[in-house]
Image (tube, rainbow, N blue to C red; front, side, top):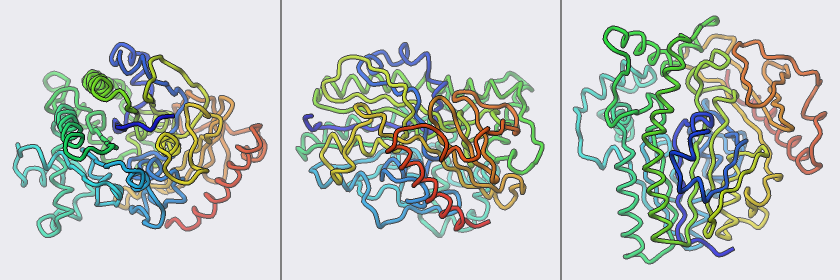
Length: 451
């Protein structure tokens, strides 16, 4: 395989698989027609930090260590940007998500990182973002006093702009400019990573955030959005999402994707026309919950809505659509990038498109503190894996089992008829070996997670 001159890796944050399909062909006709579509991809983790750490390292959350309790990426293992730099790629990141920047160490190895909210002219007062952050996101409250002292925490508050406007057009404009400039001046191969918040809460259906309901009906819509972002479901044992409004909020994400998708498609076509020898990858870092298992948002879950994600891979020279329905892990985009560029160790170089059977579909979730108010019933870590159209979930020392693509609407998942599915399920000898290793390592790591 010829090494691509340009690699563009695009993540639409929090985007569920079923929000994209079946409409992705209509919304992204170019990219859809020349990509490999993965229909059974699960993120190894349920929120931005551990998921990106896995994609950038090829390691499980229990290995790289970044989770809801330990919010920092370790520095003692190589990451994708570093690996690609060693192969002559100039590495650049443009992001709307503060989590994937220097604050948590996720941008290690990038030659340049652009925080889009800092580079677009300010259209709001700093005090207003701080006040809204205090009301909208309780976990900022302890940091408000420090905001004007610490630069990084100031970044955190400024980043609240992303909640009130969509930056999709701005990122694509900057991405085109950076590619053109870098190819003209640096004359190097390029790895460009883009993270979009438009499909993340509160789901930007327009350039500016607006509530959709008319008149006084805006009040319950706003209150349900507050419940989502404040993780209210983790604080009340019998919390019930407003299921009359929840489908509407899910539809907000769908319409946000409908706004974003044509921009992505146009950008992909422009890249391929300008640089035929290019690889374009589009996906999501994790999904979102809209009432499945009475769950909201995305912390501390292993639900299908929260972990099944879209993934389209278009390698240089690909002109036809291909579909893969085997269960795979999003973590293995790392191996695929290593394969296309010759980066990393030899054992790491294999491609999801060519060898999806090598991928182990495992999900890990570690309990979320929710500002110290998490109910005892939700102070639990979880392990899940997918095989043979079944999903096995381990929580509170019990195994549960459901068909894939079929979230339970209640907390009472069906018990598995297997004592320990890790040992009893049928799969290839190598995958079974990998699964047993991951399971044992997870159990050891779980004992180190604070309660």
